[in-house]
Length: 165
Image 1 (cartoon, one colour):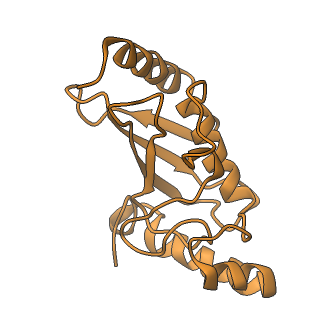
Image 2 (image 1 turned 120 degrees about the vertical axis):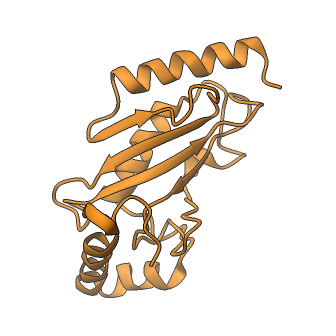
């Protein structure tokens, strides 16, 4: 069970993220009964192949938070070298790695780093090597594929918000 100080920290960060989220994002709590499960919605940044898309993320804060990093997953499928191209949507983000995470880190910083990852993918630390290779070798093909994924999975209606087809 989470300590009182952990729950206090989580409550404070949740209030911060819901009242003043990073640009292009909203943060909600799917169930008031569970402060450890958050949902974020990320608008694809302008000037990227993700523009116009809406991506849902799940954020799970472990019982040991802030001493252990949150787990973040894309619930909406995305074509990206740093996100698994499957229904799990695992994310490779430096700030979340166990050796990089520090208790002063905050969920807001994680959200800002995720948004930045859509602006500037990191093909040198990929979860999807073939997408990273495409990003490096054929940027036009990468952008076409990313836009196609946005159209298929992140454009509202039946295809958005975690549709897995």
